[in-house]
Amino acid sequence: MNESWSMRLYVAGQSARSLAAITNLRRICDSHMPGRCTVEVIDLMRNPELARDDQIVAIPTLVRKLPAPARRIIGDLSATEKVLIALELSVA
Image: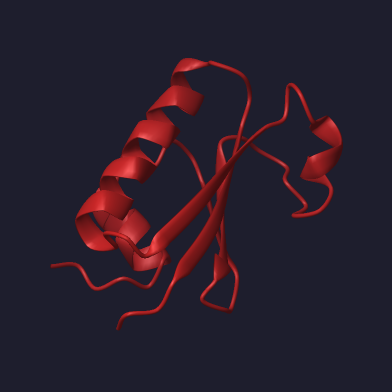
């Protein structure tokens, strides 16, 4: 399974939950998808209109764009095993 991953992480400024989500997502990408993961972090404090595109109702929210189908996970991504299952990555 060597596909490329494209994800968007919607956060709100530098809140503790936003920073935790960014840190946790980077850790997950580095350990489970090294070199195959593109992450776009979108700060809704700066660009609130972007929430409409992915119908964001809570933050932080991770949206997996690729591989299809799209998946979304709400929260700081600290429950690694649940995140891997939601992203349909095998838990190794």
